[in-house]
Amino acid sequence: MVRKMGQIIRRGPKTWLVRIYVGRDRETRRRKYVGKFIHGGPRSAQAHLNRMLSERDLGRNIRSSRQTVGQYLDHWLDICARPRLRAKSFRDYWSLLARCVRPRLGARPLGEISPAEIQTLYSELLNRKVSARTICYTHAVLFSSLRQAVRWKLLLTNPAEDVHLPRQPRRRFTVFDVGQAKQFIAAISGHQHEGLFALALTTGMRPSEYLALTWTDFHLEHGTVSVSQTLEWRIGAWCFEDTKRERSRRMIKLQNWVLALLRRLEERSKPAERNPGGLVFTSNLGGPIHESKFVGRHFNPLVPNARRFRVPHDSYTSHNG
Image (cartoon, rainbow, N blue to C red; front, side):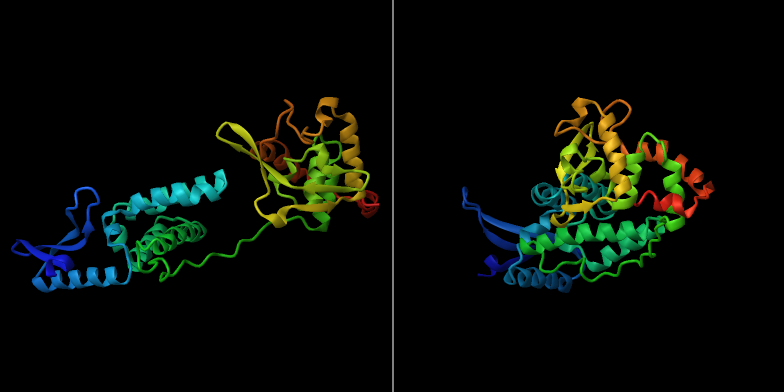
């Protein structure tokens, strides 16, 4: 009976092999043990054996102690994260774990990770000038992965629960006030992408949303546009996808002056561009627009000009009529 429960075997003056019985191999029927070398006195070895037995009795799969954090994260990313995440989100998860977690914890046994180690990791990241926002995002990914380990009975508790996160400074967004919006409208007058700028300014759509719009999404006779998909550049190809959340699918009422710009854009577009799947906003080469390149080439040069404009009030109200 003692042999089935566990064993403490001396391997040196202060070295002990502590192992616990976990069943028989299905094919060979040989006994299987999970063990660990403990350095110290016999009390340390006995305490470790008691802890292993206690965890087994509480339902933890103690064979997980053979698995490193890095091995577990590989498994979790592949069978849990990848099927439910968009490609970009999956890359973000993978990158955060690779940069922030694996160098410090990747080689550690999964069953031995403690809250103190995770807290130390976050402190080291702060010292490396990693932003509080990135650390909090990393924590969210790590917490989710370890929560699944608890569900799989690889861990008794989630060690990421009992840590303190760095305070995030409140993000301040620079947005146009009414006067600046008037000046920007004057600055984009006659610009080749005037309709795009007008739509972005007045609807609050994300770049990935308005750059994905096709003429089918517009109902110009009703003065509305439907948002249902996004467009992103991924590893050498453009990808259309449904909006990330159900509530992001919406119908937006357009202002009259924006409608007028869109009608003129539709009239100037080529017949092939007006087919149901044709993009409304395209680059000079006729393909989709890269957001980052567009901002650098077209939006940023307009901002200083917009600040120099002084637009009479009735010039703006005529646009909104």
